[in-house]
Length: 213
Image 1 (tube, helix red, strand yellow):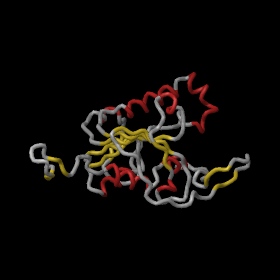
Image 2 (spheres, one colour):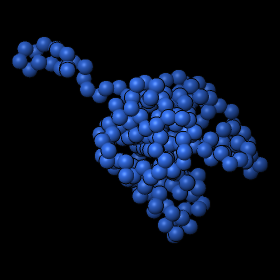
Image 3 (cartoon, rainbow, N blue to C red):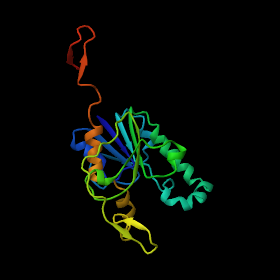
Image 4 (tube, helix red, strand yellow):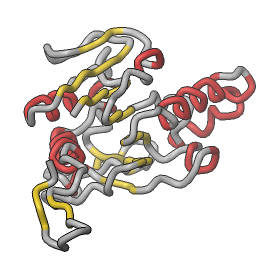
């Protein structure tokens, strides 16, 4: 299966598909953090290249509900409109199987409700990070290893936030926060990397199963 992972610099989802024998490529404006097939640049010209599966992680900076206090300014100067247009370009990619990931935000209203909301603790990580998935031609992800929801940290403002969110300031803080959890990447590769064709077909002439070649 030819797989394009859009807007991924960590290489986690790409590498999960590669490990299972797929022809997977990541693309991002940034270089990849993990050596492997990666295209550094704009992903939009690649969408028509005959991918069997496209998984997109469009930037959420101007879309996520966590930044709602800035929405008025972002609507006024066009930043949110740009984010929405890019999200929709990925969601409408011509691949037969498409998955788009984003946190809770404006796309549930401006596009449609997500097909599924997943959590890291459903896939072996003791952490809570509400993540929306918009799917086309794909099944819902099935939890693989449900564990505890993880510890939370109380900030000075009284907000209770997960430990992974309260990282010390640093240039890679945003990348660490946004990277796909390995357990979720593995679930995507295992469950979405299966051959969608039925293994057996029924003969209309004899009514007997035969190998679908």
